[in-house]
Length: 349
Image 1 (cartoon, helix red, strand yellow):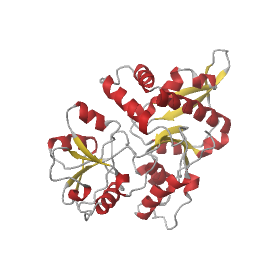
Image 2 (cartoon, helix red, strand yellow):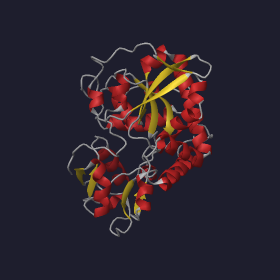
Image 3 (tube, helix red, strand yellow):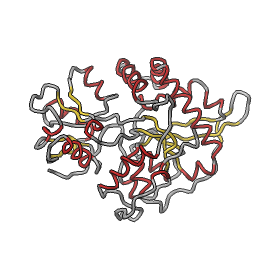
Image 4 (cartoon, helix red, strand yellow):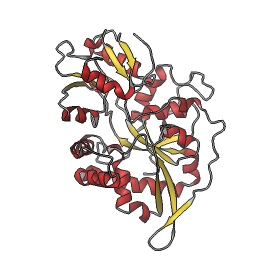
């Protein structure tokens, strides 16, 4: 097997180098800047939000809350930073963003490496990626059949260990070839240049169906892999501590936006499209993705948005620690398992 590090999807662009930056030389966390004015003339507190990619359905709640006026009601002016290719964790850790869209795995790497980032809400309660092969492949019926096949990957170090775990749990050896193609991975799968990859079922999975590219998918949790929070709302912990009231107001208005998206996915999709003119050329893709997220991913078992548990954080994060790929601020492998309860907070909900 080619042990080339990769990572999944077009929206992740997580740049593991974010973790290797450590905290040396990061910008100081200043006072919350003021920007714009509310309808009553009072000043609004600016909050800078870094996206993980160009706007997509994982971001719906932010645009809903903004268009519905809920941030302004909370005394907030939301500044959505243009996506630049720099990982949200890097921008947050450097004080160039207050909040950002992250992933449980990327946040684990970044915080282990010394960046002051913490998860303040779970945007997706469950794993939204899956192993995918073309549906017509009669030689691939279960993950064990991926032995000896070619994986089209994305460039991060935990893809191979994750896939090996699933394949071995299905009875295989976990031996396969890896080619790093990043966003070209899906096209390689469709063209038969690769045998499997890991799309987001909430976007690329739907996109494949719309393009008549039928896929067979294998969910990690069906093979004993721990579920995790695929997408989270991360914050600069130092900033959030210093500006606790503002941070709470922002998170609570955001929760309101995502609860709307969970209960009214069609309307949420329309808000997302209207807030980003020209960004979405296939409305059906947005509508179907919004409906899937609302049905299966946004809310926890009790119907609430944003909640996180130590149990969920510990399972997958412990797996990442066990791969030996987590490093500290000096780039040295961690020798002691972190306290995963410090990697998230529900206090701002």
